[in-house]
Amino acid sequence: MTRKEKADLVLDRLRDRIPRAETELDFGSEFQLLVAVILSAQCTDARVNEVTPALFEAYPTARAMAEAEAEDLFPFIRSVTYPNNKAKALAKTARMLVEDYGGEVPREHKELVKLAGVGRKTANVVVQVAFDEPAIAVDTHVFRVANRIGLVNDKPTPLAVEKGLRRVLPRETWGEAHHLLILHGRYTCEARAPKCDRCPLAEPAASGEPVCDYFERLQKLPGPVEGLDAKKGRYWSKTSGRYFDEPATRTDRYGVEQLCEPSTGSMNLFETRTGRTTKRVKDYRVG
Image (cartoon, rainbow, N blue to C red; front, side, top):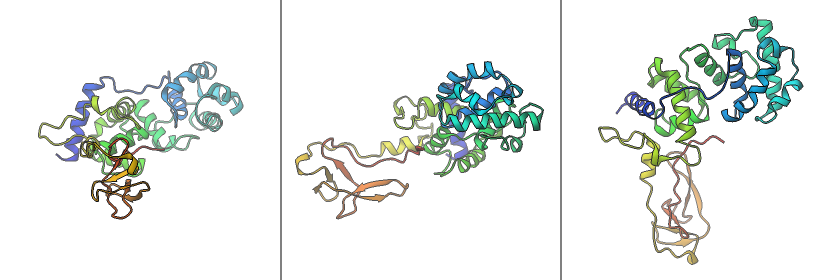
């Protein structure tokens, strides 16, 4: 299965699970969307939706917000992440919109990134959601999910993931794919505890090939070993049969730092208390 074929299959399965692939941010205009996306940086959409009703009631347009100072905006957004910086960015952006764009949100990506608090991801969201232009915004969810599934090949940065997705996804699906991957990451392929038991991508393709690389690697982890004696040491090496307390570390071929037996370098270790393997699968969590 080629990467493009995998991408088509992934989108088909996610469409069945997520019939409404759209942003969860609440907004009533292009300007309000821009504000909400700026506030959502390193913050949940749910928290942003808690603060924006009062903010938008007080400052519904760019012209209204342009009259405010950062300290006027801060009380409305104090519960989001980095409220001081975001209040300054919103005040500056509102003034820039009024002075340079007639109070309107520009449609062009190159103009959006000139605004305070607007980077590549934010601009991609705005052009896609507000203006229905093809774009793929890569947040922590999209970064994690695209790498885990194998839609991209172990890409280390959001920009590299975006470029990789643009290569394998049809242009007309970019916006939809962005929302599908975000929602899949938010509710199923979570950062710390992915719900693989209810994931639509855990089932192999009709050809028998795995759809999700991450799930396939999880299945290949060694099963628990019974009958280990925790009194003899915290770890047991299946390679040497030895018990010991202080492991060393090695980096595996996926770039994951694994525990290993100091004397042999073997990574085939098990915790004696639980019998579980110490091996970890790269999960692409950010932060």
